[in-house]
Length: 118
Length: 114
Image (cartoon, each protein chain N blue to C red):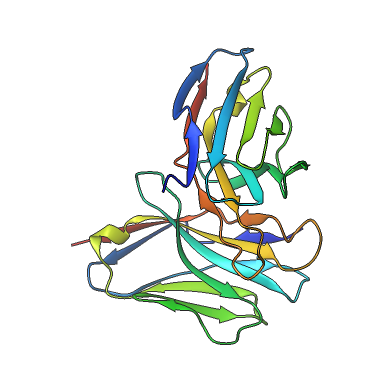
């Protein structure tokens, strides 16, 4: 079974600084998708960024970028120029690409709570 | 756009009571999901429906049943609630196209079982 590990339960960053959240995963598939979701205090789950495993280029969305290391099965999220509104719980998630039973399901990590300080 | 709508948003039950969480999506998505979120555990999949007419167990299905009523609606039922089912429940949907894979979530339903 696929597993997703987030080893940092909590992180803190000063406003305007950069922070990196770690995520590793375990899979035997070669085709899959990876995601970072943000959950602010409102509880709403918001997609931050996605990465297709077949793409070598790291995904970027404004201040958010990933470092995707396929061989190491690592998928970290970098937040640049951190803002107070970035304070939230961040979840890493995995979805298989082709194998029946895994292609439909998202597997989540346990989350990292990010605090942004002045 | 409403997206994914869950009801109710809050519910308190006594042990042994039953209830149904309702979920509807207006995005014409094929796949729908029910997750539960507990502190330190992330989101765990309870049941999912890859397409209308099919349902499958996820990681933690015990104590729950689901019904995919039509393409829009996917309900989660607790037949005999237990304190261990105290959690926040999320419904989600996905278009089913592999080139996206993104899940769209409802706002969550907080359930407390006393």
